[in-house]
Amino acid sequence: MPPKSHHPYTIYDVAKIAGVSISTVSRVINANPNVSDATRDRVLEVIGELNFVPKAEARARAMKDFARIGVITPFFTEPAFVQRLRGVAGALFSTRYELTIYTVESLEHLNHYLATLPVTGHLEGLILLSLRVNDDSAQKLNENKLETVLIEYPRSDLNTVEIDDISGGKMAAEFLLNKGHRRLGFIGDTSDLGPYAILPITQRLKGFRTRIEQAGLNLPDQYLCTSRYQVSDAEEQIEKILALPDPPTAIFAATDLQAIGVINKARQMGLRVPENLAVLGFDDLDVAEYVGLSTIHQSLDESGRLAVEILLSRLKDPDRPIRHVRLPLKIIERQST
Image (tube, helix red, strand yellow):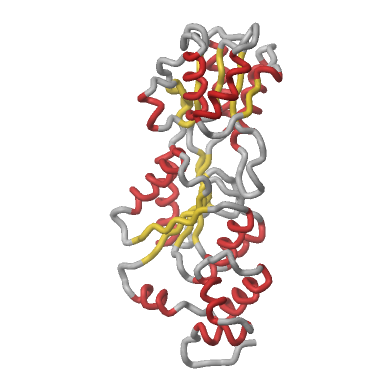
């Protein structure tokens, strides 16, 4: 047990009680991953027992107009994440809250943030984009009263904003079937992107396959294409499918970037879009309208804006019920179908 004190505890007290150096405490406070799990846990336990607030943070908290909202995100340069962040930033623009972004490169990196941020007092609220949150992390977030909203990952004990990816896949198949297509293909990255990321593409494929089978058809393996989230890789990977003796007449791409890659390769091979090949994307990125891509629209900017709205309402009134919002999907038809 820490000694009783009538004065605020300092970083020196934390270091002494935890049996580590001041620099180690500083690394833990600043979410530096170069600390062992055992040491980090010991320092965080002492910080929690002392209710320690870093000096600079304490000064900042004393300023009425200062507060931070954090966003943890993977794949920061991907357009879908940029658009979600745009929604977050826009919603915070006229408030007193600053936006702090944390990027995740591994499960260890994510767990480090989720272990550290709830107890260091850096943030008033937290938004996670398309990342898994396990039971231990959710418990820590709730115990330390760090208001949190998850985008694209459902949990009953935290606020969430999500879409129904299975329904999205069914919607894609229904749309293409209604266009008269019977040879349908799929391109997307259905590999496991790591234990910290969610798998929406797998869900989209599941819904797509289900609706095709309900129509009495099938989705053969030779019409399935695995591609990274890059236009260039989609161009390379789809070529072998488009070169088949009986290629699909329509392809559902799990993301707009992959759809653009399919269109580029089809045209390079002398195929006309949509006369010889219809292409449907998913996301409705800004670029989709410019290239005439038919796609399934999900409200990327709106998901970020809504996450902020939920977060601020909970900060104003912590007794408000947890909210679970499912945003609708819709087909945007353009020239590619």
